[in-house]
Length: 200
Image 1 (cartoon, rainbow, N blue to C red):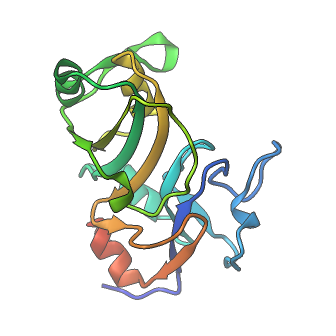
Image 2: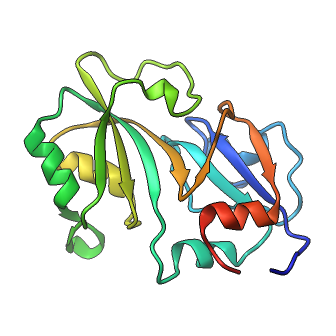
């Protein structure tokens, strides 16, 4: 495997921050973080403003294609807080496939995925303490390999629940470990590609 001069980072992206360095809107930016990123650093696989958790950054422009546009699917796992208690029937629907509208009003049906109820969400990642849902609520761990726009939120809406919080906790074997929200860790190239199960 060749060694390059590219650099690789993981970030525990906080709430109310977009996955970019420049925006025309009044929002939190990656450049607001207390970290000196090298020139040409960009995010891989963005998280929206209201989503939190694992965000990958690199100076290597090829990584997005290798990770998200390859023929080999890559697992992404999300910790999701929803309102109310979820039924077994709705859990089954999430696991086996739900339908929602995507671009041009086309209906899309998700493939099978892994879904489980989480009793102790704080054990899976460092998260900010903020009230997002009144009781009763349910925390789910959802692992998908597809990547439709806002897919997890749309899956939750399709079963008539509301997604109150969405935290990406892993991509393949890459996790945030004990990273606090807003903190960054640099990863060596070899480890970065190995944990993501991609060949370059």
